[in-house]
Length: 110
Image (cartoon, rainbow, N blue to C red):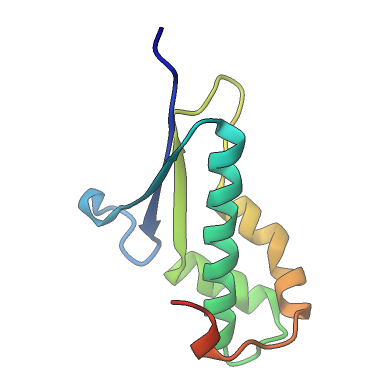
């Protein structure tokens, strides 16, 4: 019996059409674990983009920066009826991220 594994690959929104530009971020036993890791990638990317923004309290600017330059993870395969959208998740997280205290760029781990 074969066990399904879920792979997370992260693409760069700056070059979204370059298939070879995807980075293998890991393989997980469950879809939920893979989605949780993909969310961590988006959160890390949002924090980085916030550190680059002219107004670090503006969620609209943050979302625009994310969709232009951020990391866009995908989970494969997707179970029937489930879909993780990094852009939708990022849009939901922008207000929360903008309310966080600013983090020094050196502590972002990027």
